[in-house]
Length: 379
Image (cartoon, rainbow, N blue to C red; front, side, top):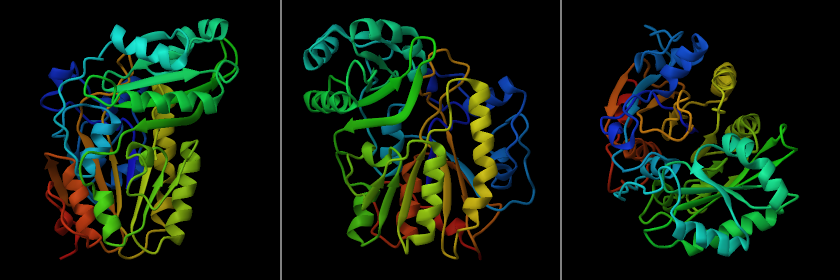
C-alpha cells in the first residue's frame, strides 16, 4: 500500500465545514501547469475518478479504480492513516485552524525554554522563508499549524541540535495528553542561510498510540509481517509494525519498497510518499516522475501480490496556506492475475480499504469497514 500525502481528487460533501468546498488537489494542479502526463496512472483508472487535464479515461486498463471518503472528522494525515487502519475519530473540529491559542504557546515556550515565533497556518517552506532569518537571529523555534490538530516545530541545527529538537517535541507530545491540545507534534530541521534555506527531508512525528485496535494489530496477531517505509510507523507510534524504515526522500522510499518486495515472503508493506512540494510546477514534476517509475514497481509483483495506491487527504496547490484539505482520495489497484477495469465505486470510509487488506491477508475481520476484495478477484 502506497499512500501519497495530499493525493486529493475533489471535495467531500462536508468540505465546506472545513473551508474546503472548492478543493480539488489534482484537478487544480493539472489546470495550473497546463495538464499532467500520467500514462501509468491512467492505465490504473485515474482518469475515471475525476476530470484532470491531460489524464485520459482509458477503456483498457491494468487495474481497478475507485475513490474513498473519510467518516472521521478532520483532514490531516492522522485522520487518513488511522481511518484506513480501522480507527474512526469523532473529535470536534480543530480550534487551531489559523493559529494556536496563548495557552498552547505558553506551554511550547515552557518546554523549549525560549520564545517561539510564527504561530500561523502554513507549510514548512512558507514559514521557514518568512521566519527563518528571525530564527537565526534569536534562536526562537518556528511553530505553525496545518489547520488541524498538529503542531509543527522547525529549527536550524546551529540554533537547536536535531536531537534536542526531537527530545523537546517528544516532551510536548507527552504534555498534550488531553483533548484541548495538539494531537501530534512534528519536528523539522532546516539548513542554509536566509534566502537559500535548505529544507531537510527528515522529519519526526510524535503522536500517542491509536485509541483502538488497528489493521496493523490484527495483521500482527495473525502472524503477518508489517513493514513501514517513511512516516507511517510514526503515525501509529510504531505499534503494529514489524520493522520501520525511515526514508529521507521519495527516491529512497521507492528504492526501499522495490528492495522489500523482493525479500518479503508475506504481509503488508506500508509506504508513505510525500510527492507534493508547495510549488505547482515542482509538484507536477514529482508526480510525473513517480508515474514513470510505477512500471518498475509493478515488475516485481508476484502472483498473489496486490498493489494499492491511495492518499490520506488533499493538499490543494492553489491555496496560499498549503494546508491539508477535506477531499476524496483515489483507490487504484493492480497485481498479476487480478481483475482489471472494475469500478470499485465510492467508498464511504477509508476503513473499507483496511478491511480489504485484512481479508486479502486472511486475518480476523475488523469492527469497521466493508471489504471489496471479491471485486479484485478474477471470476
